Image (cartoon, rainbow, N blue to C red):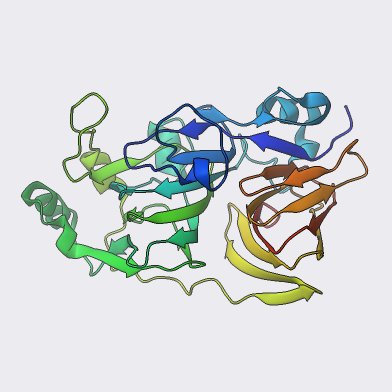
Length: 330
């Protein structure tokens, strides 16, 4: 097996009708697409795989690197999964997304040949009046949901939540949800691309036709009880001089954390039993490891895959924010 090292990733960019341009202007992602709705900054999913930008594996996909390195690269906590377990996205919702729901593993594997989708959202930035949909505002029945979809009154039973920068939301599979307009999000999720649209406000797709809805499947998988937000992620705690950390989510599928680093502060990232992904959200930093011929300079949007058992030093060159994901407790 060739020597493992941290991989700087180049994400596939997705163009959806609700997307904006901040992924290009704020994060510098290069694309000829008019809209850049999503950047899949950590992905081995067949619908969009990251490419490697550094080292001897430059030009290969992250999937190819993991195949080459074997299960040791993902770690003992993640290798039990049949496929690479998580997907990390940056999402620019210039307009609101459809009201939608994702199935759990059992349903998705039976009917979609994919994983279920539990996810979490971290609000990087948002408009002052931004809000999102998180479940229902009271307990409902399938019959009522279907009737309200047909009568265009679904809005009356949805639970709307005001959001602000630095909020975090954990969204288990089966929770009806929608990202509102004017929100820039980092999303950490199971590696899945299964979405059932419940309502899309009558919008037309690129072909001039209404985008498909998946009401029957959505009704089979959605949670019908009143949705109560779990306690939001905790406050930032000091980890070391100039470094503070905030736990965002921890579940059977992934862990997520946010970090703030003062200029010149140093942070060691890595895990014995899992890979770690790190995405810089603001500022500038440098990642170093003894297996690298050169250090990796990080700018907003940069994502690095750190193989299991590899520990890397990140030095903030300016005040910086970053988000990490791993499967160490999965």
